Length: 246
Ligand code: FPP
Image (cartoon, rainbow, N blue to C red; front, side):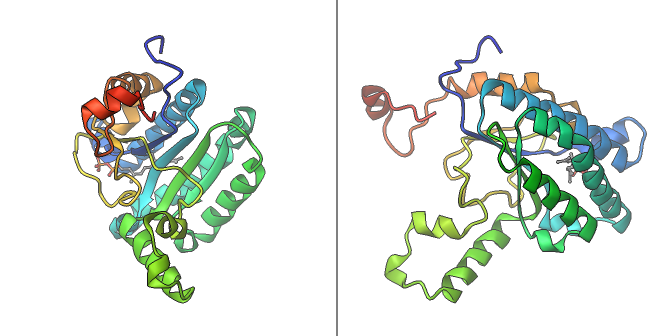
């Protein structure tokens, strides 16, 4: 942590928490054991992000495509989510964490929806880190949804710009991620925040999610701070203006 420049902390980190199933297999257990141990990694990532002043942390907890998994795994994951939200609520309040969610939330089991809404309501005035859970979420679903809303609202073609299109996305009040991390030794995006990661810095640490701890997050931030983000400009333009946009 001492190697992190606290004046250039990313605003928003998004994480694809992959590798729970393989972690469980490697420990000779059922897949759900990996998801259960993934909760400790979630806790550590939230703690680490909060400690260094990250504003938003978005976690891909369940994708639209995850509905195609075996029913027992889906049921166990939903039950785990309900339990984790319930158990973590006091800690979130103590650490001033605000909880939000994106995705097709109405497709979640009723108990999961109500636990989530309760936690969102109770934490809504917290002023620290905002943790955004992506649940029943996919980037293509979100973009198609935005197009439907634009049509329903009779928005004229000439009024459609990149910035007002993004107001129709689930993430309308959330800045685009500066960093996207995917654990689990896979290098793909899997339909996550497709619009929002246009200029995110990508990291694929070779670690399975249940082993991820805040120290891994800090290492990534140290490397992030060595990268030059050019947003389409030349390196010389960026150096001359000293705009690093962290
Ligand atoms: C992907 O690993 C992980 C998931 C689909 C679920 C992530 C859920 C948690 C970490 C549980 C708790 C979450 C919160 C926010 C409290 P995988 O199952 O695809 O792993 P594999 O690629 O090794 O099969």
